[in-house]
Image 1 (cartoon, rainbow, N blue to C red):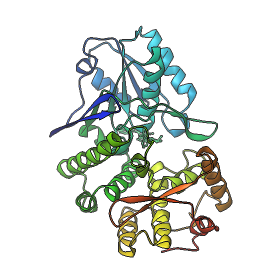
Image 2: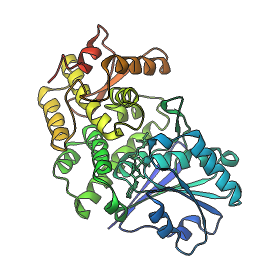
Image 3: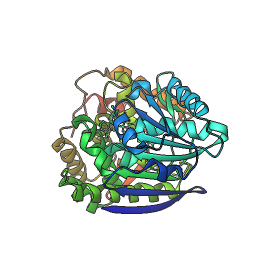
Image 4: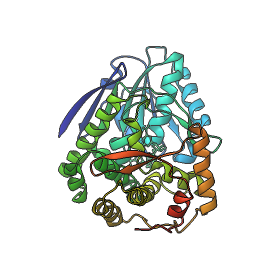
Length: 350
Ligand SMILES: NC(=O)c1ccc[n+]([C@@H]2O[C@H](COP(=O)([O-])OP(=O)(O)OC[C@H]3O[C@@H](n4cnc5c(N)ncnc54)[C@H](O)[C@@H]3O)[C@@H](O)[C@H]2O)c1
């Protein structure tokens, strides 16, 4: 199975290829000096990709807790030690944490070096590896520091998904549901019947890549309203992640819970039709996500509200939510009057 997409994000062309097996590092480096960046779980995949190329490897500690400046520093040091010049290539092999870190490092190394991403998680494939957002967590705030820096090449080897743990698989499904809500009923139907066989999976990933890629092409730097739609479920979800302590609740769990809250807010505002809110919530439930409020563990409602207020400060006083519309989704301002607090506390449950 092989499928390729060509996008242009801002002025940067970005090729995305979905393929069965891991790529060959030589093919990615095209004779230039390169640094392979992976984490401790994706190092076997990185070693296989490296083969006998002799390219240098930088292995990071795994997990969101390690999406830090220290990790970026170690990538930059490794690049220097490997003798990368401005024509060097950074090759990030891993999930969203590795690709966000590696892409950030590539974006600042000698004012910008070439970047390839080999995405190895479902979440990475359907979301994180496409569209050029890079970054790391800082001062306890997710992705506080980052750049826009699309990868010239993104490879999605389906083979990599074989070793993915159930928790990570589930995390990716939430983003897939999100894209399906934004995209079309065809993908929504495909996700409903998703199985871990290559054909269905590859078709879902390809459709999600196309939907996300086209959205980002229209609004690469999120200056308009288009790209912001990709944050469906994320205002509530990020608050949950922060309130629980970064890395305690998976990104997917948080986004799924956030999407259920967005459905409730959309219903309250009359933007989300009841049948659609039910369909989305039922689909999330069928994947085993917690969709009820309040979230049962690790997230005090007051702390959650505080996290959302922090988000508001970051967005110059205005807090917006994305809610499902009859088709796609819509941006709505915070309705005020304590409505979002009631939603978080389960007082406006479906
Ligand atoms: N840049 C963007 O546009 C964007 C979009 C969505 C999410 N993100 C970011 O992505 C991150 C979440 O992504 P993620 O869930 O892929 O995180 P991750 O990179 O931490 O991967 C999840 C876990 O799976 C392991 N892993 C990765 N590939 C594996 C494989 N093939 N087999 C076995 N284990 C494997 C990792 O070591 C890690 O333990 C968050 O930091 C989020 O902010 C970025």
